[in-house]
Image (cartoon, rainbow, N blue to C red):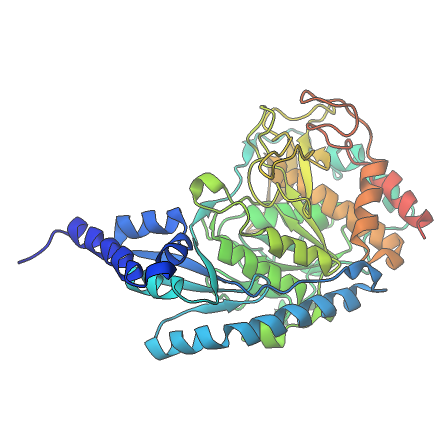
Length: 482
């Protein structure tokens, strides 16, 4: 007799429940480890891409007492990888014996398993070393708003002069000595506005060393690519410059990048974590993140113009520890607030909802909050957390496109890179602040120009945060900081 597909799926799920039930007291706790989103995925297709989160999660002490970013980064990397290697050994041995394909991670102590069936999920949930099993869904990037070019286009666009970036350049501060990172759809590294700032480029005949400078968590490309264009645009607002066009706030900073979304802008929690691991301790193209990471090659600031919506299956807390640990490693984690405005409490997606992320809203040319910019407060954690931290220009922002062209776009995706660039200028002016994320964040907040928004409060408020950023004031404060 040939069973209908839906009948087989139901029988498989019943089998999960029955197999757990025969173990008596262990049945309910084991079944409760399987998130509803995983159960739903198994009910729909009998297989699911899953994240197996282990019980043993490393506890980091206060990393602020370390004197340098390298010391912070090395401490975090060594602590996390030591815990992961030890605690994953038994589980990995079982998966190897079963011939199951998987990927091991350390930033969150977890194993990612593609296309797991119900029997495997049942088996894993019964293990004492497994805390929970989550879905690894495909989730869409933040939307952008394409806008007509305004003629004539100045060599330095309005958004850079509004935040006083040009006045910082007049002081001879342009971002030199700082490494920034972009986690996105990739980068067209050969774009004239970006090639000379790529850390892997030696300046000769388009030859580059991509080891430690590029990681493709989507398709394993050996060199930077950007099928989706979004990453080229956002990184261009941080560092972009060529002979007659400048789009970057810190145009002489060096950049590295990681591709965490495919051509149409879909990412997964695992890809997002994989890129964070690469930035905390970059590794070579064929290297093992767990053993070959080098914290001495880490960037000082990461731009994150993406979101992981819970309504698409991304568990709100999945990325929380990962972001906290990147910050503990002395790296500023800048995140776009999202484009779900104008309602209050519309900052709803990771990583913008995390206190460890430095969240950025979008403003217009006349210093109003953009209609689409997501507002706080964030209430998911049981308190009213003010978000964003600050705001920056995010409407009619010009940036480079793959292939050598340019485009004017809008969104908090374009606001966040302004803050990434300002942080790079500050660190270029005051290298002693590298790794001192807490000081850097506070200086950017305190020097922002106060603005009163429509979601309550004076300063900070849930529209602008502490205000619209000012590069000159932030750099001057950095120069005075001890």
